[in-house]
Image (cartoon, rainbow, N blue to C red; front, side, top):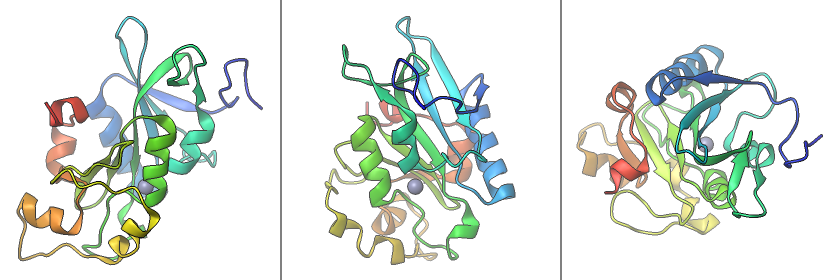
Length: 195
Ligand SMILES: [Zn+2]
């Protein structure tokens, strides 16, 4: 059931005061319950920012389902939820779902979500935090990933534990921003990553 704005009704979410408390809560809880947890960073017309985390027991937690939660504002053509513009989608890739040191960045499905919402999609994985934009551009070298085949072998890759540099990480995961621990300590969104 959808409301008059096109948003899915009865989606339970929790509000946070800032990006750090939101994302640390998401990661820790997701590791405990072993479920992908997703949320939105939203802005209203006055520029105020909001941090929503969706309840993980409602079947709408992963990136794909995020598309179904939101609606498109017909006037602005932007993705909206709860009457606010979506600025970013963030979700976890809990480590129990991945083999050790495996690629933990965005999936093709996550790329599709970024495109559908028109906003960057961030993934918090065991090794790193990554971002895929709606144009499929990687953080590392501006290479563009938009075809399903671009992801064919991505998920089979593993981080080289002998090369822990950012460049080394990006050889495995071109969407890698920084290590999970340093990002969660000081999380930043796209604008501050790409000045
Ligand atoms: Zn994902």
